[in-house]
Image (tube, rainbow, N blue to C red; front, top):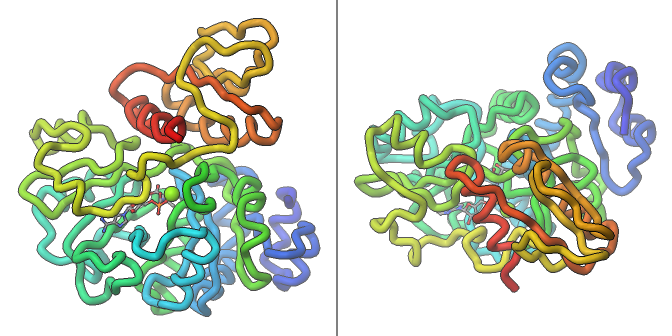
Length: 358
Ligand code: TXA
Ligand code: MG
């Protein structure tokens, strides 16, 4: 991985030289920023432009968002999107989220947008929220999994935002991006995790942009906006309380009105987000087991502590990397003492329940 100095010069280097410099042979890991935010605007404009061009040419670009890293492709290019499915090993009827740079571009992809969806977008975009809306013809079957709806998100991470804008400047309409992990596995929250997960499957013209650790750490809240009331399909950092305060509604997770069975959401399969180690939701690990719990919980003797976050926000930030660490350490079991509460803890418990089901 490059240092800040290397990043500063990276914009002047050819891609081949840059990949040599940072020592990745099978794919290129572009170091957009080691210290997030501060470096990006003065040093990497040309690196990001280069990545946008790669997307436009039909290559895959893994990039940071505030939630998790995405594996991006031109959302209107059938061949490029087919490679996402191939690289992820994901069934082709599972739809993808299209990432755009701002609410103003929403009506290119979606129609019959309800007033409440606009309110949500104005309040929480750019940010960790995805809206499912009735689609326009721009959203083809290879994006929607043959459904009449399309999922749209405006991410807030400075690198994703810039990348998508540059892509739009080149005539692109949106970047399709699932989490940059193999199907069913743990989403990556840093570039190393993307690289470990994808290095065998990406080709030399694909890119990975390093934008540091993701600040949220779990995937966006997905909200179905095709009915009279919004319905949460996947919990995330935008919680029911935030939504209800804004819209003066009283929705919960998996609202009763929601025709869940008709909507294909891969994160809603019973097993998902799973490491190789068996995930056990309990606070009683034994010697040799991995353990993830809030700092206030002690580590029993002989137990391998994988993370001690101070609160639920930190819990979300470190969770996926801690699960990866369990695999790196070849642990067979990882015990997780899930945080209580109705903030992002709800989403943490949702992911852990899925990770523990097999
Ligand atoms: O935070 C995120 O949402 C990350 C970052 C990269 O943006 N992306 C992400 O994508 O988590 P993915 O593909 O791993 O999960 C997206 C979920 C899938 O479960 C998919 O089935 C669902 O969104 N989805 C996509 N389009 C949909 C649609 N039209 N209706 C219902 N669910 C949809
Ligand atoms: Mg995913």
